[in-house]
Each structure stands twice: as C-alpha cells, then as structure tokens.
Image (cartoon, rainbow, N blue to C red; front, top):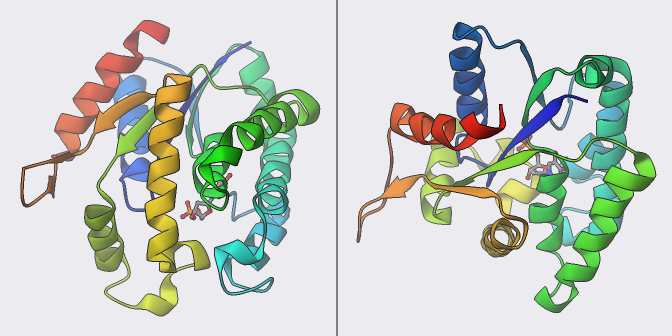
Length: 223
Ligand SMILES: Cc1cn([C@H]2C[C@H](O)[C@@H](COP(=O)(O)O)O2)c(=O)[nH]c1=O
C-alpha cells in the first residue's frame, strides 16, 4: 500500500496552495506522487455535492443533516479512488490530498451538538474507511487559521461578491462551529496542527514559504 497525506483546514486557510507547493518541493527531490482534491468537481460523482452546495436541498448547511451530506462527499471519493488514484496508491504511491474524509469530520460535525460528535465521527470513519473501503490517511496536516482571517481571505478571493460563495462559506456562525470541530478533531486524532496566523491583537497570515517549511519538517518522517 502507498501513503496518503491530507491537507485540511477551514475555507480560505491555504490548503490548495500548500498542497501544490508541498507536491512541487517533493517532486523536485525526486519523490513520485499524485496530487488530488475533493470535492472532485470535474467528475459526475460530485453531482449531489454540487446540488447541496448550490442550495438545491435548502439554502442553509443545516438543511441537509450531517449524515446525508457526508454520504454525498463519500461517494465522490469512492468514485475517484476507483477510477483515478487507487491503482497508483495500491502500487505504493504517495498521494497528497487537498481535503478528504477529514472535511466531513470538520464541516459536518459542525451541524451537531458537541455531545454527538464522537458518535458521528465513529460512524464517519467506519463508513468511509471500512464499509466503503477507501484508504485511511497516514497523516493529516491541519492548517489552523482564525476564522476572521480566513473570512478576509475568502472575501479577497471572491472580490467581496457574496453570491460566489457556496452555502457553507456564506454562514459565519456555521464557520465558527466548524473551527471548533476542527480543533477538536486535531487533538482527538493527532493531526499535525500548523498555526498559520501570527500577531497578538491583529492577526495576519504567516508567509506561504514559512508555513510550508514547517509542513515539510512534520511530514518528513512518514515519507
Ligand atoms: C471534500 C469535502 C468538503 N466539504 C465542504 C467544505 C467546503 O465548505 C465545501 C466545498 O469545498 P471547497 O470549498 O473545497 O470547494 O464542502 C465537506 O463538508 N465534506 C467533504 O468531504
């Protein structure tokens, strides 16, 4: 079997940038790897995810319960494992993934009261890694960003146009709950927590290179 490393964090935490930069750095050192991302919007398997995020099942994240929404994302992963990266992984390849089951853990837990998180997380990991049968990660890199900072970055990404945000990105209270769930999961499951902001009163984002150097040092032992 190969190795699977996940990049996780709130929307606007720099996961895409850090996944790509890590891939680039490792490739430059001769490491053979595949980079993947979820949701896999290019594939038909993301149809239900797209319906959900565009508000076709209701315009608030809570209109679709944690279990139903998780299943949409899980089948998308199953399809990509079967048709895209499964062979490479089983032949011993290294996969770097921008989001994975861990995004269900973070964003779907947020719909439940904390007393139900453990039950949901047990169900989720059993469903995706055992019942559906996609691989469990070898390491999860969690990019921790204060919600106010990640929201500013999201606003910059969309040039202040709220209509470009999906239903999860629009709901600030839901984002705060997602942050709490992410912190809980990071502690509970031993994710590598990378603090991406700095400063006391005014928080700013650390430089991309600085964050990446910390990530490379953390994942080195498992490569
Ligand atoms: C991949 C994935 C994403 N999500 C959420 C995170 C984002 O709010 C939203 C869309 O992802 P994106 O912002 O990376 O396009 O879907 C889940 O809830 N579960 C998952 O498994």
